[in-house]
Amino acid sequence: MKSIIRNIVLSALLVAAVTGCKKRFKEPPITGKPTDPATTLRPTWQAGQRYIYRVDAVNSTQVPRRNTSTFIRAEVTVGQDLGLTVTNVAQDGSRVLQMELLAIQMETSADDRVTMTFDSENKALFYEDNVLAERLQKLVGARLAFHLSADNKITKVDGTKEFNARTAGSGSIRGVASGVYNRFFSVPFFRDVVEMGMLPADAVKVGDKWTVRRPVNAGLWATSAFLEITNVFKGWQVHDGTNCARLDFAGAFKPNASVRTNDSLVRRIVTAAASPNVAEGTVEGRSWYEPGLALAVETVFDQDITTRSTSAKRPRVRVAGTTNTVVALVDTADTNAPPAAPPPGPAPSTNAPVETVTTTTSSKQHTTIKLIALEPLTKGP
Image 1 (cartoon, one colour):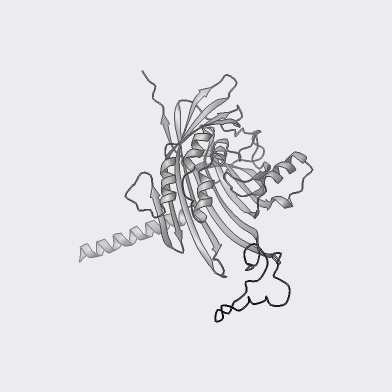
Image 2 (cartoon, rainbow, N blue to C red):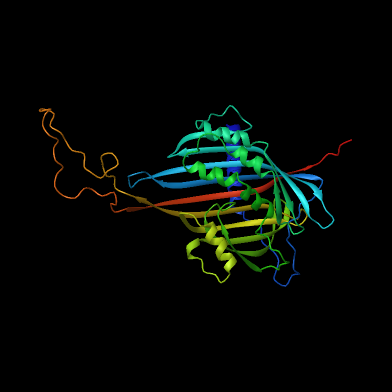
């Protein structure tokens, strides 16, 4: 009896301790004040080690079902491990950063039914969409070399031809998975990961804000819209055991056609980026920059996007041959009877009114880009 009572008491204490920990847990405080000296938060990739970044994303899209008012909920999760290594550093501070796709995972589902699961490191998992699985398998080991200026801006990319050859293949990828595939396995996406465009070009103080405005038709955001995003240096926060600079950002996507600017160059770029789809939405997230590594070690963001596409639907007209004459019905009872005359009235016109159909699709996406390992490079003999 004493043993039973003792076990009950210990269990109650354990539950109370766990509950107390949950209640006491809170986000580490953000420190710093605007009067502190300005800090440079410029990204710099160092030689001598390989950076392993992990990308995870969950995309949930409401797609209208054809010819009905109901929607299909399509979900796609994607993960990839990126190895990044500096292969050359010049005297002017420029360098070459080689990226390799080390591992890939992807799962697709429609209305809670899993349609494909792929893991490059676990071949026991099933996959139903052979075209998508084959494309993903081909991408493992793909490489790109980014030429970076001293301020971490990409000036040249080597290996794009070979990379694009890996992404292509026979057959087509179906549904929402096609958009996710083209977004996360593209040169523009990796360019954004490497450049870390949320970081300020100049030194900043706590509370400083800076706004970025640019057309985006690929990369992290993957929408043919104009992005206006405001970043703020919130202060210093302990993240994964290290004191990091905390940056918060929020912004909105605007259709290209609605952008008004006095800069003719920007107008030309926006016009070139336009597509039949009109996308608008919001993005919100945060990033942690570690001074000791001179890089953003984690970036997390959520984005909501609504896409409207308009298509023309022309009524079908039945014609005989290449003319606009109506197909006549012949009475086969009397084979010697003359052909029946066409009914009175004008022949149907192929210039029938065009019906405009607008389709609206909503999409939510949560993305995390995190440094998960640093591997020192071993020198050869």
